[in-house]
Length: 638
Image 1 (tube, rainbow, N blue to C red):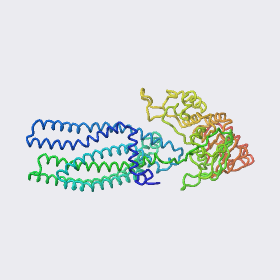
Image 2: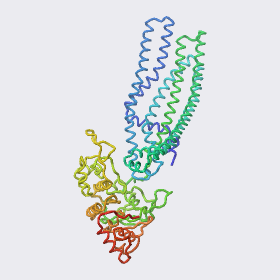
Image 3: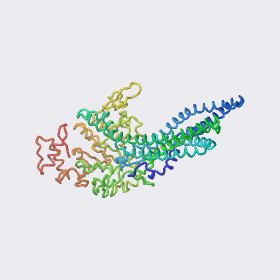
Image 4: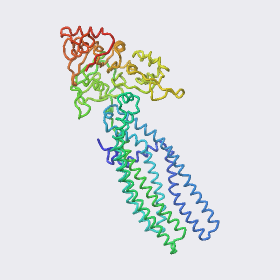
């Protein structure tokens, strides 16, 4: 992966990034940008006007100027002074307006781009998370910093040109000396800017780990194990170690900045002192008037201040431009999962889904998860996937949902390659319960309606899905029914400020199942361990309901509880990424292979002894044991 933020990166030159930031600012708050330009013009010329008006007033006083001359000059000087006092406050107000508008637009563009990637590959890449964190940070500050620094540079240039013209009139040599003294500062500031950007990227992983350990120390989900296993000091030490690395890198940068800028400040002070010494000598010799001395001193200070401001603002803008590359890198990146320019329309499933010689691994450094899988899932039938942990079952589900594409081979929906369809169209036709389902800190009703946002607007459809999942009575009995917040880290509504309710693991699993059943009319239903967290009685009730619900529907089932899969039309046994066996339950038991061994091993957990039945009686004994076993603990498999 490229080094993000570099000047030669794929996000364009610094000029391109600056133009992009300016366009964002104008789109976010055109009135604030236009107002800021007017303020910059006034603030850039006000110091020069103030210096010249002061000179004229002093010369008028020294030369016995009349009131008719001095009073208008004094009034003009007062207006200029008032502008210098008021304009910074106006600028601050406009900056705030621009910040709020930019922040909303930047966040909208950033997360729109992140959500536009239909695949998972980028989200499982640590470098992407480092860049995403920097993009988020840059999005908060970089565009406004670029625009603000650009305006400040324009203001500084106006002031610089005005005072340089003043110095040219009084002493052209001083113009050359002051500018020459500022050149080293410009070079040092730009070098520090580049180093600052490299440092931010270098410590990005440390910062992210520090945030991770901090979150574990305050997370309600981790709180039980942290306290039970006494992990607090261990995690705190890890957090502080990462923080120490970050602090040391930042301290080294601060030392370099202090050393460089300290020496440059001494050089600037020496130039100013030399200029003042020359002006005093010239005045005593009659070469300069009192007003000339005052405007000369103001001009030297003004030129130095303007140059320092320009160099500092350019360094700030340069650093922001480098950091803005992370934002543009995320926003402008091609999706990790390609989307066809002219997608094929996705018809309702009529024939089935076919996997043709599918190979898959998550990256080139890892082993193959699937190795040449050929499988046909007929329309209207249930296909069960069986295998030990790591056999490739959940990976196959991700491929069916097109969260990844096969590295080799293809998957077809009624003969159409999934890569020729829009992923969103495909997923609209799928209902799924993942093994690692989400628990959202939202209300009970919202947790279910997320399965189908359009249908979720109807509360009765939400309740119907909950009934099918066997969770309706539990949710209805909550303090606020389906409107109860399922979280202990947020308050509910603003009126009672009461914390929400925490469901048990089994209840959350039923709720996740209800979320998937919001899509009950979809063409394909995928159930990946839909009952792993339930007790035997609840599991039996759930599978009985699902069996009725999926009758006549195309479905893919995954469960380590083989008794729940025995009525599937086809059972496929995966082993080391390959299909080792396939057939009905009776066919596979009769075959006496891997499925029969696992089925008998699991069934033996329900028998009075742990002996595995002899091969001749394996099918009848195992089926009788697993069908008549009383509710109780399940034996583990794999």
